[in-house]
Image (tube, rainbow, N blue to C red; front, side):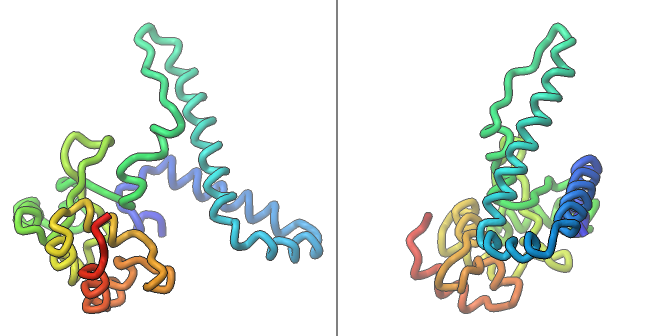
Length: 199
């Protein structure tokens, strides 16, 4: 399931996510019934708890990684937690370069670059890549989602258009424009975009 969400995900991340899910689930279901019922009181805050937990996990893995590398003379620069988790890839969702997109989605590089030049797809600059990368969620069945080009045209900038598309909106019932494009509600999304102030 994780691979389908992001074909570029690395195996250590998949293993960690799987093991954590198993351990957490096992710890929760063995609690008393009273405790299990009480979990309902924190349902709305689960995302915040999970984010804090993963941030702490990343902090620990970074420390461990740096300790192992400290044995070498050429020591790596210290990585802050902020630099580790606040990358362009994070806000944009899963991204990949042309090589990976061709491998996993079957989209030739020449086609991808033609779409990029015509502003029919979104490409963004990322601190994790020296070249622009492409958010993967804009592709369905080997083609850009209907409405992507229109949104880019409205905002006049691919990065701004994608940021607007992935932002949850109250007028969309808490969904994002991208969610609605996936539901083929193109007119609703483009109409809202025209009435929005660029981010």
